[in-house]
Length: 118
Length: 107
View (cartoon, rainbow over the protein chains, first blue to last red):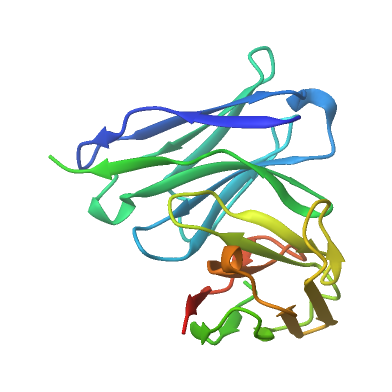
């Protein structure tokens, strides 16, 4: 059974860089055929897709965040990561990692709340 | 960017009711649509993909229909565990986009 788990600081200061890692177990990131994705949810709001990385390293970012987002992959650790620079309070959200396949996003991490505050 | 209009945003219903949620796209997406259920404090769970295919383990009271620009999620007989928020999501093109969500609450 594939499982995903987010990790990283729960508190980030304004103007700094938010960094999260998603560790995948029960399956290999290198197996191909999946988009390894980040999605966020502002408190009490809907879901916002941030971007994805393929095991080869190719990426696609949401144009609304593109200038501040970097997603990378470490196949040796079976992990992929999110960096969001120059954060403000508007970036306070629950961040999820997920695996997208031809049939939607069947596997999600539990989510991690990141608060941007001084 | 494909914009999605999901309605209603809030639906009050009773156990045993049949409920319908709509999702309309700003352009055609064939059948590249998924529906998710989210309960408070939890990650979304995939219910339906390819507009009408039930994810493994999802009860048969859930069904999806539509193609192109108009899609529907139906719960045929609402159960207590179905009170939650539902989202549609298109995976026809990038960036992926979600509907605004429909909260199904107890009437």
